[in-house]
Amino acid sequence: MEHDGFMYVNNGLKNGITYFKCNKAQSHFCMGSIKKSIDGTITIVKRHNGHAREPDNTIVVNNFRNVLKHRAATENA
Ligand SMILES: [Zn+2]
Image 1 (cartoon, rainbow, N blue to C red):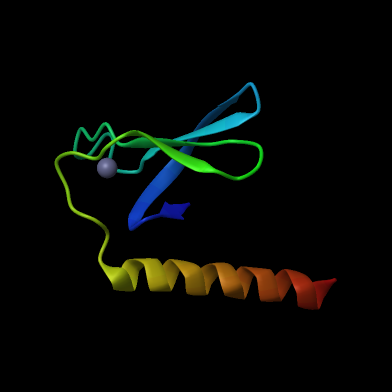
Image 2: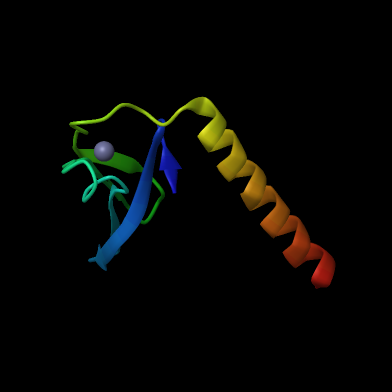
């Protein structure tokens, strides 16, 4: 998922809270992580280090893919 210009991968669920870690955790030794509570509130757990935000076009492409995915699912239903 994308949040505030950073990309995250799911890092597990605990007590209803979903944890995400930076998708550059391994490649950049980044400690960036966030958590998402049941009501959808996202809280920053640790800030990113060692790299910048994703370029805007990466996020746009990503969102575009999600739209296509959604559209395909709707049309097939
Ligand atoms: Zn990061």
